[in-house]
Image (tube, rainbow, N blue to C red; front, side, top):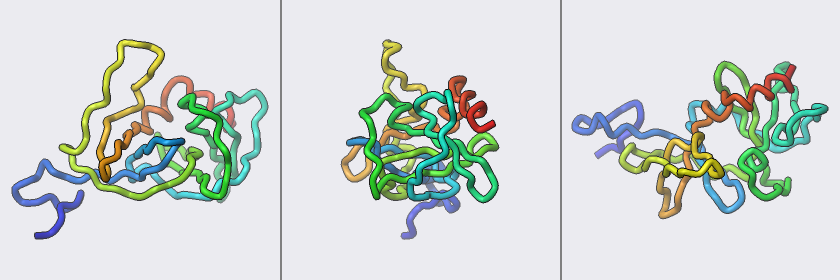
Length: 167
């Protein structure tokens, strides 16, 4: 029996298409973003800082003639301060017809999850904990994987600041 893939659903399980996610770490947590949004993965290099930019915008880099804003997801998600080391990487994303880089602690793997392996994100009645960027929670090797809606994150209203910083 051949494994079910995204492009080749099984004859009796058309609804069991596998979605692929690039997994990465921020602190102790594992996150996943849809692999189709990923353009490339690069080692971290200090970007050119932009005056008066919000703290989560680390700056911009010139990637083959394209100015790419670099965002630190640790700062965006209000996690503890990151240490930039040899494992720190920038994931270059192609989202909403623009390229954006996100700094993460490390990249883990590409995993495939079937829809039944993904649970909806929990809803909280508090404005303190914002789950609007979480599409669901997956399980990978017994570990929780927080699945991000990177499109929603990058196109949110506060991300209009990214456009200002890049221009």
